[in-house]
Amino acid sequence: QSVLTQPPSVSGAPGQRVTISCTGSSSNIGAGYDVYWYQQLPGTAPKLLIYDNSNRPSGVPDRFSGSKSGTSASLAITGLQAEDEADYYCQSYDSVSGGVFGGGTKLTVL
Amino acid sequence: QVQLVESGGGVVQPGRSLRLSCAASGFTFSNYGMHWVRQAPGKGLEWVAVISFDGSNRYYADSVKGRFTVSRDNSKNTLYLQMNSLRAEDTAVYYCAKGGLVVFEEIDYWGQGTLVTVSS
Image 1 (cartoon, each protein chain N blue to C red):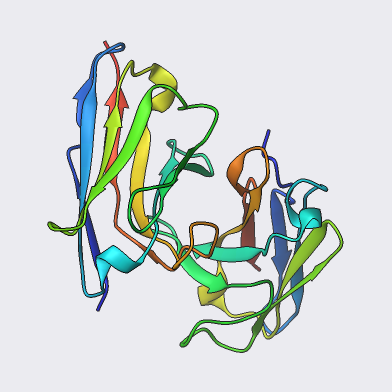
Image 2: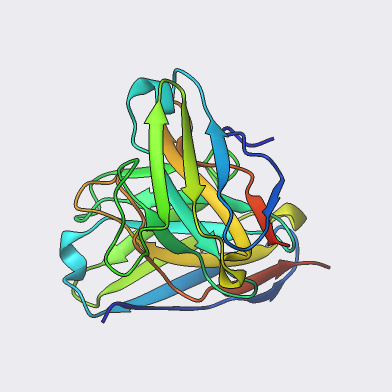
């Protein structure tokens, strides 16, 4: 049982928009800790996709965007491409648990 | 470019110990917090521990507290994870990862991981 809750899977057709939610609580996201998003392609290490809730590292396409409100955050991917098929994880910090991850969401591009 | 290379993984019996190392290059190691994150086979990511840039602050997941110790040698640009009293549920790929200037920031670079298998 992860501290942050994500849907196990989402899917969309090429070109469509999908969103992945990340729900926390008053001891983590709601306490003001920033949210980070990572993409993990099959068989590889995770890669930072979004930092500080909504910022993209250099090299990450602007098709990826993040937002945070209250005790939740979300990742949006527009113009879906086949290479976006991966596992996506949200991460934050918790005043009790230290670092915390969501359970991960598998994105399938139909 | 940032490189993080883990070593020390392998097969170990329950109750035994293992020490992982992570050699860092391509950035000023002594300026950044460093994390260990693990991933059990077919499962999601689990944060394990973080150590501040100078080693003065360390935080652990409840699942490893009291058994694992994170440390660093800034003169050797190396991060360590001492794992004692290993259990079957510690079986995972262990990733070394670079954090921010303060401990509770983003993890911006990851190593390729080293597999630890706890089995009799």
